[in-house]
Length: 67
Image (cartoon, rainbow, N blue to C red; front, top):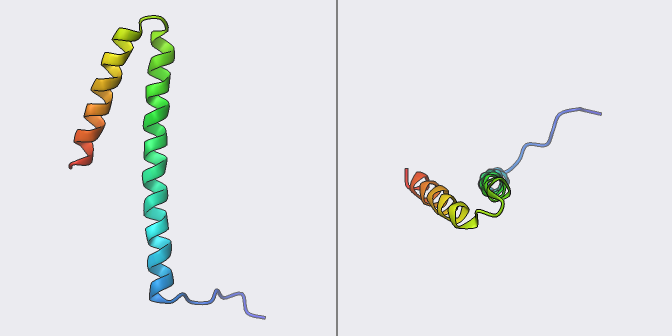
């Protein structure tokens, strides 16, 4: 038996590429959410300040997506 993989069709290749792209986007968003969660835990009872920082981080993340 041959150990070679069956070559994929262009459609299958594009599907895998598309899935990898969205998997990467989801991973980035999870990292962003984890960072925000850490900030909230760090701020503790000072939530008004934590909310301000979270808004700043979220605004920065939205601006980064534009570029």
